[in-house]
Image (cartoon, rainbow, N blue to C red; front, side, top):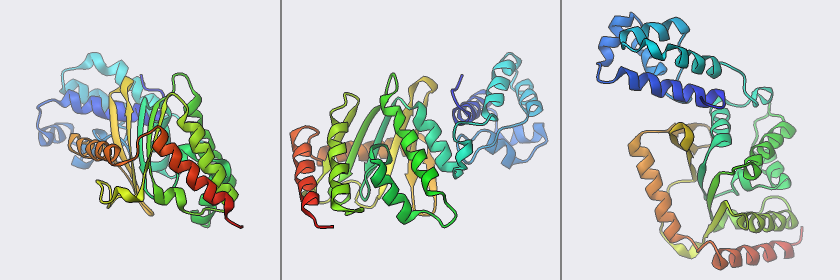
Length: 284
C-alpha cells in the first residue's frame, strides 16, 4: 500500500496498465464505452493522470478477468483521493506531487546549475530565493515553511540516499548578503558529512559536460513501490518523466556528471571552503 495520495495514484495507474496486459487500448475503450482520454489518464501516473471511479475500476477488472484485485485497487483509489500533508499550503499540483514522492524516496539524485538544491538550503537562503522569484499572490512564510518541512526527510529513519551535484556558478551566485552565502556553503559542508548525503561540486574548469543545456533535474526512486521518475523544473512549467527511455537518459547524464565533478571528499570541500571564505570577505 502506498503511503500518500500521490504514490497511491501512481501505483493504481501502474496496476491498471499492468492488468490490461496485451489487450488493445482501443478495444478496452470500446468495451468500457468511455473516452480514450479517460482510459489514458487512468493509466497515467503523476500530474497527467486521473483517479477512476469505483464503478469504472470494477468494470475494468471484470473485463480483465481479475475480480480478485478489486478490494486492493479500491483501497488504493480511496487513499489516492485523501488529503495529504501539503493541503493547507495550497501547492501547485506538480510541486505537490514532487514533495509527496520526495517524502517517500529511497534515493534522490539532484543536479543544480544555478541554485543550491531546496533540500540543502538554509532558511535565510530559501527566504531570499523565494522572495526574489515568487508570484505576487504567494505567501512567503508559507513557501519557506514548505521547503523546511521537505528537509525533514534527511533526518528520518531510514533516510534517503541523496546525491547532489552543484555547479560552481550556484555556489558563487550572491543571494542576499555575503554572510548569508558563507553560512549557506558552511551548511553544505555539514550536510556532506552525513552518511546518507554525497555532495560533489562541478567546477568551472570541468569545461563542457553532459548537462550544459539543463538548469536542473532530479531522479527519484521509491524502491518499495517500484517507482522511479525524473523531475524537470522550469520557470513556468514542471514535468515528470517516467518512461524507461527517459530514466535511462537522465540517469546516464547524472553518471557522466559524477565523472566530470570534483570528488566528494577533499576536492569538493576545499572548493566550498574557499568560496565560503570569499563570500565572508564581501562587504554587504
